[in-house]
Image (cartoon, rainbow, N blue to C red; front, side):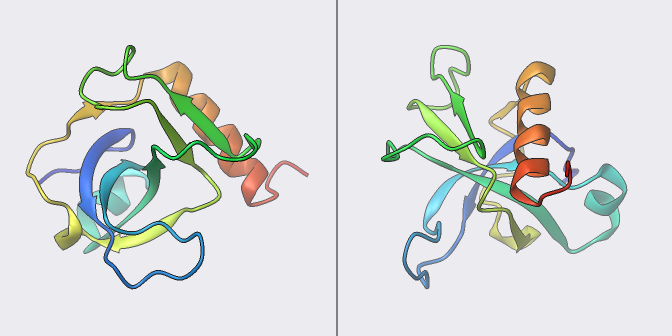
Length: 119
């Protein structure tokens, strides 16, 4: 598989989670740069959630199923839940969709906020 930044895959994030950590089978968007995607056995990604949060945070990006028909439900990309996972956790060989550049910019800004990179 050739992973690219901005692609969305279905991943098995496992069952061993605590509190509000994201686990289970769910979409993830690839955040890592394409050199890392090519050579590392792992990928850096951000999980999606279909659960409506009590409060939308600056680290949450709303994705509509109307804009991304391959995503079955309206979702929130949780930039405060960045994960490094093994490529073996990806469940299919092709992405289900690719995040558009305008939404990817929102993700990047949310990651900067989450990691305090814009201070």
